[in-house]
Length: 197
Image (cartoon, rainbow, N blue to C red):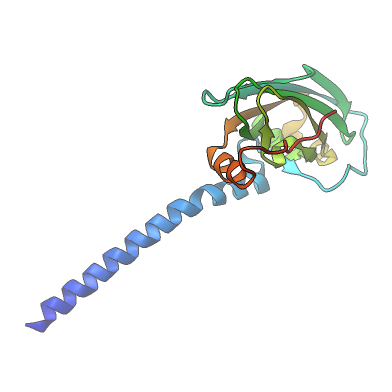
């Protein structure tokens, strides 16, 4: 009669192991998906570059800039220019403006993508406010730079010959976890993590 007890214990252990594995995979799914998108450019995810391009082509592309904020972020966020036309491989510099409309310090984190999505693999950011969280004090307004270029390898892709305009979109979200951690560590006051022009 011990066999059923052993079988029940074994079944219970298998079920617990499967549940723990599924929970672990659910936590790993978001970072894994983000890494996949960054490597492949899937969904218009842009790439990061350590330095400017070593090659500049004659072909030009117009970059359009877009900005939105989530409902729970009390900021006004907008691009400072509508568009910029540059040659492929040429380094561009664009600015976005953010203003904290609330009476408390707020930390925001930006997500981004480009359209058409197939151009994401070739949109290279050298420096960007989106690489770090941004803390804005009450009423603070900042001008945030972003330097980028379009990788000359785009010219080797025939299915991208039709791309003459790329739209870069940012969405800022309130990062309440970072707010609690940072503001607690500095007693409610802090210095904005940004570069002012």
